[in-house]
Image (tube, rainbow, N blue to C red; front, side, top):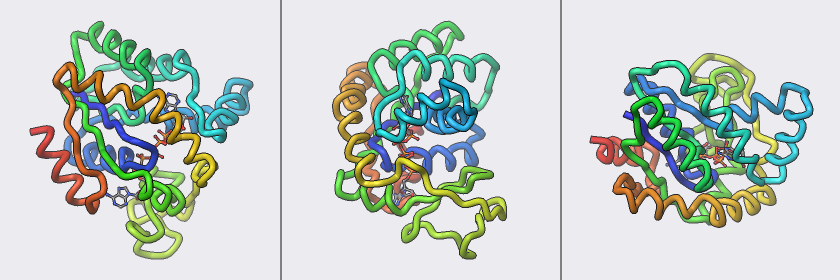
Length: 213
Ligand code: AP5
């Protein structure tokens, strides 16, 4: 099964993707994570990506489609979770073609719907483990022991450079202009499921599971 998690910045895509990976053995393909890895490379491309991400804008379609194409090369029986990709109609078309070339398709698109007001608190309170990628929040999901990742025990906990109100405003604008048309695109082909992402995490997980059954 191949699925797309769609939603505004902070809607909970990464959180739910990690739960699906653990529960179903699926492979998470997050273009945000791939780009964050690229920006640390120190190359000209990495520096350009860093500037675009910090400004809350979208990286070009060619770059992200190339990153995804590389990841689809090998087989993965558990299926793929596309997290933060596609974000434009051009990316959606490219993904359809890449999967069709492997004799596959998108089985389900889950839109995590969250009010804009809730996103500020989610984004400004988020931190992640720099070693295993576990996602936390100052109030809704703190670590059990302060400064230590529950999942892998690392103390390398980080906040993202683009997790501030100014960047979020720009990211939301990009989402409404370029990504939200995908809701209609996937509704029209019958694969869209809408989940209330404002619920507590466990309730969102249960609704995602229902949508996939
Ligand atoms: P990306 O990394 O994809 O960021 P995003 O889409 O802005 O999404 P986030 O990772 O911010 O949020 P999320 O939905 O995963 O929420 P999370 O689970 O962490 O992209 C970053 C940048 O890279 C983009 O701005 C762009 O520049 C570039 N980029 C990436 N992909 C691209 C593409 N395809 N094309 C072009 N450019 C691209 O949750 C957020 C917080 O809320 C956490 O603290 C979490 O603990 C908490 N939380 C989660 N669920 C709940 C809940 N139900 N209740 C309470 N708290 C919750």
